[in-house]
Image (cartoon, rainbow, N blue to C red; front, side):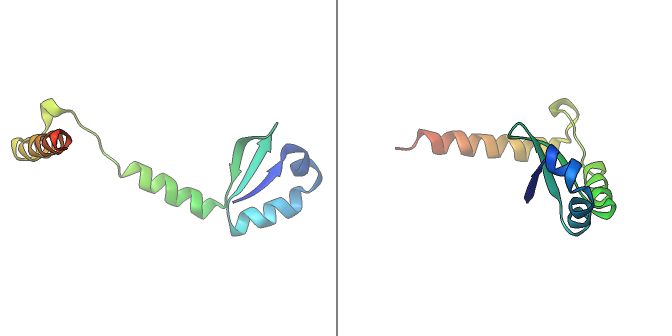
Length: 83
């Protein structure tokens, strides 16, 4: 990803925006990443992906899924005991 400073953004905003329309651009301040500029379609895709994520708790997990989870944990623990 191309990086520009906040000073560059002040001086070359047109060029930076044109590049951000093609691919994400990182804006740095004091050598630290501070912002990412990206086109609206890429942003919408990121938001849509984030909205499809779900979460849950072990207490509400279906028994079948909990059994598979428990087996995976036990397998992992057993592999850690091997030399």
